[in-house]
Image (cartoon, rainbow, N blue to C red; front, top):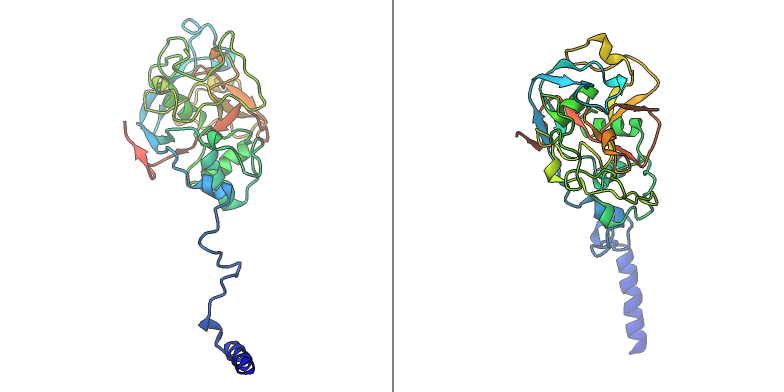
Length: 294
C-alpha cells in the first residue's frame, strides 16, 4: 500500500511539471505580492487626504511695494509703492505639504528633503509645509504638478489684495491667532521647526482665501531678486529681471519677527539654497483641477 501511494505521488509530481505555464499561479512571485503585504510607510503616507485646491485672483490693478509714511518697517527694496496690473491667475490655497512633496518624490525619484528619514517622516509632520527645498526643487515640483511658481507680483497681490494692507488680514499687528510667526518671549529651536499644518490660522487668510502667506514658512517665487527693480516702472504683469544671482522668497517664517512677514517684504537667496525656514506654493494661469473661486 505504501509503495502504491509513493508511486502516485511521483506520477502527480511529473504530471504537474508538464502543465502549461499559465495553468498555475506563482504565489511567491515578487511581481505579484500577496494581498496581505503591508504598505511601506512612505506609500501609506502618500495616500493620506490632503487639503488642496487653488484660489482665484481676478485681473486688475493692485498696490505693490511700501509707502514709508504708512509702513515704518519698510526697506528701500520695497520703494516706490506703485500700481501694477495683473491678468487673472490662480494660486494654491495652501503651502505645499510634506505629503504633497512625497507624492512627487515617489513619482519622480527626486531627492528627499532634510528632516525626512527612511520612514520618511512621522505622521504628525505629514501636513506641515515641506522645507529644505531649493528654488530648483520648488520649480520642478510645480512643473510636475502642471503649474508654475508664482511671480513676485502675483504672490504679493494674492497675499494682500488690491489696496496695500501690511498683512493678509489688514494693518493690525500679527497675533498668535493669525500667523505662525516668532513673537517676543517665544522659545523656538531648530531640531525640528515648530511648523503648523498648512490649513491652520484661518483668522489670517488673504483677501482671496489663501492660507499662511505670512509666517509658517517663507515661500520661493519665480523672479530673480533685484533690490532696485521697482524703480524700473514695469507695471504690467512684471516677471522680474531677466537674470540675476538670487531668487526671491516672500512671506517670512515661523522663526522671524512679524516685520519680516509683511506682505511687501522682499528677500533673496541663492537658488540652490535649502533652509528650514523656506517652502513654497504654486500658481497657474488657468483654473486647473480643484480651483475655488472666492
